[in-house]
Image 1: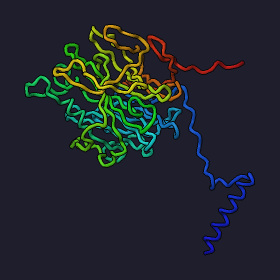
Image 2: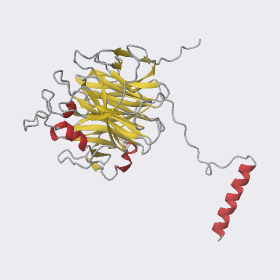
Image 3: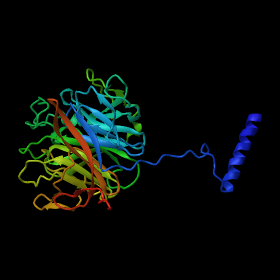
Image 4: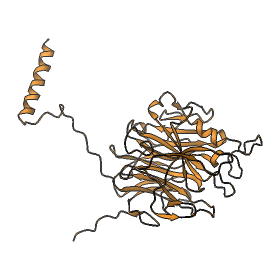
Length: 390
């Protein structure tokens, strides 16, 4: 009874202080640290790994995540390494940060095993270097059955799947796996449940007509806990949703390995797709495409298929360079190594390269701030520090 009385008196005292305009003790209103301001450059370091594939930002806590193909690196915003995840023999691609659960999501491919996953990393647990992806429990994976079905499709009907090669008519839509990932609303909406969008990789092949679309899947990951399994490269699991919550097609012309980086821009409501340029002479082979976020998908024919096929079609933003014969719009732009929107007109673009460190070749990568201008042929301008006042 005395304990309850003391608690009641304390509550009454706090309410009285608040009503009188007095300062309330910090315990009653715990202060939340403001999110650190993103710097102009975040250096992801140089590593004995593959090249930079993508980036993700935990803006509230002030951490950046870099994918180096077979290595995940976590830094603070000054570029100081905080931790890393190693032991991957598959292809870790584009990344995005899920604000809802505070975890990093990335595409993870094992083409030889016909296994395609979303890798989910608990960033709070990445607190030291060289954490093994399979044994530390820091990473779980969800299998994407829809991707496997399209990747392994025997399209020429000879009864043989030709495997991880673009020199074949196999692979539905030319699917080479997955790469670009991003969280955002359902296509055609600017708000609502944040869905994980996954973009196909697409083999470069100038001799077929059924590979001229970017293919994007949307998933509601709120139901994914039941699917998550630890990564096991020796025994790949198949736990995942039977099908996506939506499958969409964007007509761009064939590109080389499809969407390398995918990003939703909350400022414009549009989706940005950074690709390696294609090779078909009938197309302009842009390297950046933008989905018009104000246009809802429409039901229509997926062009170029051997048998007539219909699906949900997305619309290109009618800005930038325009190629009338193909009807496509786009830009020639960087962003293939990393593309990250700050949702205020600013973006981080990844820059990458190689250095020799004591005779050891390392891959370096960094996030460099740009602003969207929409200019052609390149719509981004690097943000420079203001001139010093003497």
